[in-house]
Amino acid sequence: MKVLVLGAGILGTCSAWYLNERQHTVTLVERQAEAALETSFANGSQISVSYAEPWANPQAPAKLVKWLLRDDSPLLFRLRADPNQWRWGLQFLRECAPTRTRSNTIQLTRLGLYSRECLIELRRATGITYDELALGILHLFETEAEFAVARPGLELMREFGCPMDFLTPAETIAIEPALGSYRERLVGAAHAPADESGDAFKFTQRLAARAAAQGVDFRYGTSVVRLLVEGGQVGGVLVRHGDVQEVLRADAYVVALGSWSAPLLRGVGVPTLIYPAKGYSATLPIRPGALANSVSITDHQMKIVFSRLGERIRIAGTAELNGYEMSLNPVRCHALTARAEELFPGVLDVGQAQFWTGLRPATPSNVPYIGRSPFPNLWLNTGHGTLGWTHGAGSGRALADLISGRRPEVDFAFC
Ligand SMILES: Cc1cc2nc3c(=O)[nH]c(=O)nc-3n(C[C@H](O)[C@H](O)[C@H](O)COP(=O)(O)OP(=O)(O)OC[C@H]3O[C@@H](n4cnc5c(N)ncnc54)[C@H](O)[C@@H]3O)c2cc1C
Image (cartoon, rainbow, N blue to C red; front, side, top):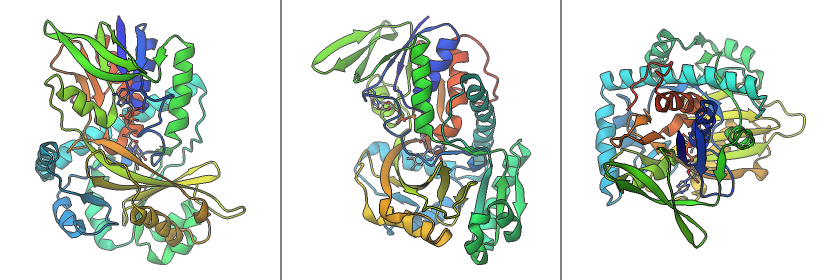
């Protein structure tokens, strides 16, 4: 079958890889000059099965009210005259019901476990390196109250197969000695020993290069303009390369355009609840000889993560729901580096921080759209929100199975 994949972020690239492996003839269209230059470029680098509890949880509404007016708050809604944002927000509130949070956490845990296995297998099969570290993830808690609130969600993930140990401060420092000066403020941690970290950009670029070598036709610098519907299915995709427009045709089409999937799909009457959630990252060199963390860290106080990428540390997090706007807010940038100084005083060269923002393709439940759209030959692999790197390999493989008429190996509510 001829398959046209739209978008060369982590999701589009993994989809193309597995489709090619299943003997399809794959073309991939990407507006940038290379793969992974948008949201998959500088994310938090965590392969975090253990961060499956979605933002939409029973505690979220009260927190959102508290954070509403703080420019440095972890999650910020900037209300706009945008019906898509309002629809998203209303569904987000519905997803905060305890039963919804539970079922979303279970779905995300299952997909995460499957995807981590797919990534490990892909790493072995291709030999791709990407500053990967298989040292687990530590979830840090500064207050007993925060730890108590997070514990049932972490226990639920453990029940569904994600190994998780609950640690005292001393046990936490034994696993990650770089946290030594933070010990007094720590009340405890959860350790997910099977989780990993690594550079999503390097991985995606290297996988794209291998896919191209194996026959996937990457059309970079080519923008998708719109989908063309003919006779109840997608008949082609109008694309633009410079001043030239052309229609590309295939037997099946995969939409993996991250936050831009929503407007494209709306154009053919396929509504999705994908809304951009802007996040920030800072990448800083480790000062020579300083003791930085090697184990990836999730700081539940500030809702940010710290991952080691060779001799750099990537700090990432925060979310702002404010449309497709991508400016760097200095207050939010400073919040990342200030927190790094609190956890690891003097360890990072803050003066050389490289700041970045990306738009997470967020759904209200954080559960992505993987599967068939209402059009029989139009497929979706999008809306992965906070976990697109964690779920990339597994989502790509599951979608390739579905398109090939096979049953995916993961228990997930495909669309
Ligand atoms: C601050 C931050 C931290 C994060 N941390 C983590 C983490 O630690 N772990 C984790 O698992 N996830 C994390 N994520 C989430 C993860 O980065 C995303 O879920 C993932 O990158 C989404 O990948 P994607 O392929 O769907 O989208 P993208 O990477 O955005 O790919 C979409 C591609 O489509 C292309 N495109 C868009 N429109 C068009 C068009 N019209 N024509 C042609 N091409 C087009 C874009 O150029 C882009 O390359 C984080 C995200 C952010 C912002």
